Image (cartoon, rainbow over all chains, first blue to last red; front, side):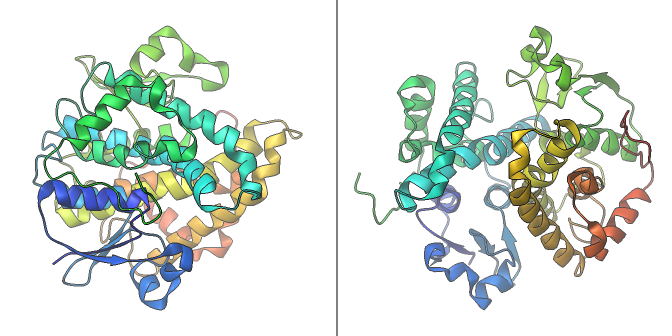
Length: 205
Length: 205
């Protein structure tokens, strides 16, 4: 059985939980608390020498990092990763967008607001993160006026990748009320078969 | 014929030129000077409403952005993109690493040093960019002690993606002398069939 190592309140790790639930596949989950440094243990560093979560381990011991690469591997052969080369590459286009132009602003703003002390110096970067995060949300909004999903006409791993931090963007101070197509897309993702919410010990909603 | 729109002295755009040269494929190139704002023309924004280069356009008018997604589309069916699902996902692992943990530091440090005035306030970020860029180079060095290429045993689009900004890392103030495996890998990329150097009007070496 595949083992996934991650921290449940990390959006990058939740992506994998959501995909496996959508696919109805079993897996073993090993919780790694990064805030306690569990990602720096010798055992974890042997799997990923950069100490980043999530990590996937196969039965034969092979390991993979980078959430979106893991999504791609796990979705191969399913309807959540198109077989057509154009549709597949468009799916990847939005997954690269997510890692380059979305996560570094929306996830990082959330991290600073939610996990760092109120007087932390990184709060000085919040204005710039908010501006760039809103540019990402605006690009998503424009796309969703033309197509229902990020990969095109069907739900794919591009939607899973973008859902992870968009649906908790309010934690980073973003107001999704200005992005009505994004809000409706979030609801469509939540209506997919097998949907599971993100687990957050300190989240009550 | 496929048309590629980009700025030749952008590493993200050079990736596509290198791949097409490795594949021995013809294409049309349209130079877009971002420093002169040519990426903000109505014609360009109609292809990519975020005004980012590179962009690929097919004969039927379909367009794609994100350099690494375009690499994936163009390499499909060739030896430069493995067909095996594990090898393909490992190739993507390093391409996501490139966009998340390498380009934002190594390419951005180059941009600040090479294209902005000596008294520009963004120079204040160079120390942090240098530290994070060296972490990326160290991760590459560790990988290359175990395998000859980033996708595994063969040259792939992961190598092309990482070569683009690594081979000009000195422009960003990085010293590759401390990364001997990386230096030897750069030479192996340069020895691949069809290799073309990056075109830079203001570069003489």
